Length: 105
Image 1 (tube, helix red, strand yellow):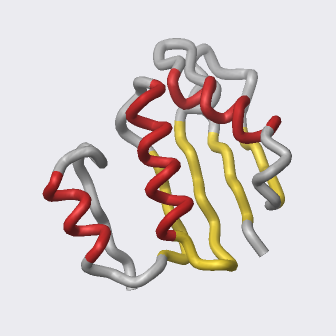
Image 2 (cartoon, one colour):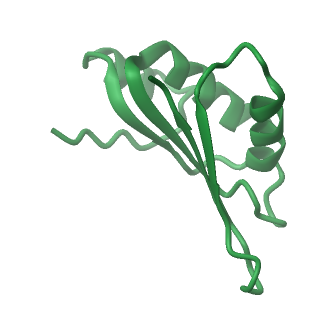
C-alpha cells in the first residue's frame, strides 16, 4: 500500500493523517525547505518508522534551499542514529538537488 500525505507537517490535518496509519516502511521527505520544517518532518518520520525502514530526503545538495542540506549534515554526524547512509547527487548538472537515504535494519 502507498499512502501519500502532502502538506505542512505542523498542521493538524497532516498530523491526523499520519496517526490514522500504522508505522511506515518508507518515508520520503520533500517539500518544506526551511530548516525548522524539514527538521520537524524528520522528527515525525523517526517516531513513525518501522524498525526496518527507509527515510529519504530530497534537496540535500540544493544551493537554493539550505534547510535540507543543513539537517542532512547534522544527521550524518549524529552517532546516536544507527543506520546505513546513502547519498545520491550528480555534480555534473548546473542545478543540484541530491537524495539522502537512511536505511534502518
